[in-house]
Length: 570
Figure 1 (cartoon, rainbow, N blue to C red):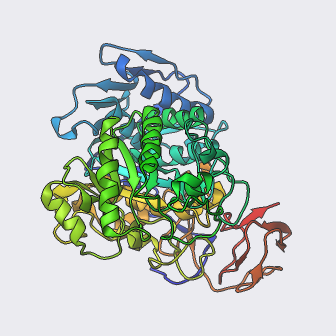
Figure 2: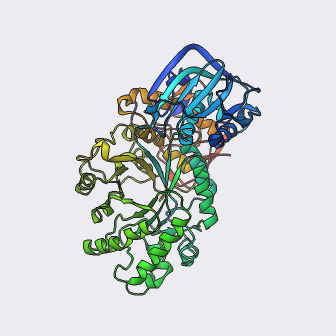
Figure 3: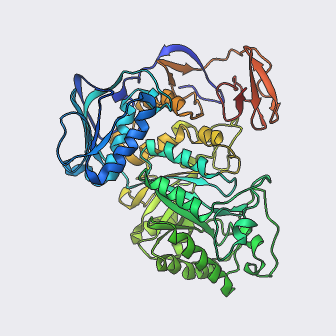
């Protein structure tokens, strides 16, 4: 393993040891039984057969495969068990797969995927994708053949809740960027998408009864800039897009702190009746709704009512973290009024773990974001029967820098390399919180420094895949040395999907049968390490020009072709 602040580039010299599809699956399945010498070919004559209730999963699979294969792949409902083609069937799966797992059987004649629910079939489709050549992810026609190795895979998740969060408050990310991220999450069997809609720097959703929240509170972002917000129709578009991928949206309105954008929009929400200025810095802990004013609860109820009406999922996230501007007594009083409002509008409350000290409701879910392995609030919640979602910042936060030279991200929780993100056990991480009390795992991505989809790519990948495996795969399969090979084999797939991932030197990256290695030899050109580059600066190397996307100090390794989050090839 190579560590340190080194950026790797592809030397094209080493054969990837994890290239065989059955040894390259992420997350790793519960059981894989290869059929030696057997393959199944998807051809121009292949049809997709589905149980009628799962027709949408068949349509999704066809939409994935048609652009790259060029095949028609018609989708038709069936009541039987087809002898050829691809069959997506509800029923007949082993009881062990539950309501989110599946059984995939590949023979020379047919591909048969069975599950008890459409969500289970959808998870199986993601495994089938990874058994096909990586170029299947291309959006343009590619040459075949399109073969799947013979196998029987029986699989189900470790945790019911496998989440990812995107902060759209610090920097606004438009609908297209959110959809792109949802597509990436779906591949790794993520089934909850936590959307952090409000914070000090921006309010990102229309609330009809309080219109200035969006028009004024959403008018800026960290560092200035235009900000932005979602109309209700756009939010519903995101929710529907996620649902089509069997991902449940969890909206977050952070309360009572992290509320400067709301306070700036309506003076009456402030105890002194004076609206503060909009904020574009990244400070935290200074803002609070006025706990003693009745209008505060009218405001909160309006917000919860309107957003809950747009959200079919069961959870409403009320934040609750870093409320340093309220006393413990005020915080308790606020939550005692607000949590019943969540239930009034048909949702269960989620929140950052601080909030759970205010309620004995066993339906309330606490999200642990601390950096220690001992927390009395969380331990007491687990003892009461409340479920915990694990998001320790020093393991699961995708916005933490990989190392000291990472130009994006923050480092208040430390540096989080790929192995750090993978080598921890959510079922034992916090003392006094047994695996039975853990609802699942979530990887949050805060966006103080994350502006573009390329930035999301660079910080989420490869660590998102590590967190997804922790959430899905049984702990008995956990092995870093095996995982790093399987993870490295994802590189050609990510390239085909246009994911600008971070090439961690801890991972042997496979690219078209070769793997990325590191070297200390400095490529020639006008770029140099440890130099300050401003946005717009251009450098050349081997006759190719690159333009700096974001101001930063360059890393000690040749950046431009390997860190597309920072450099755009012209």
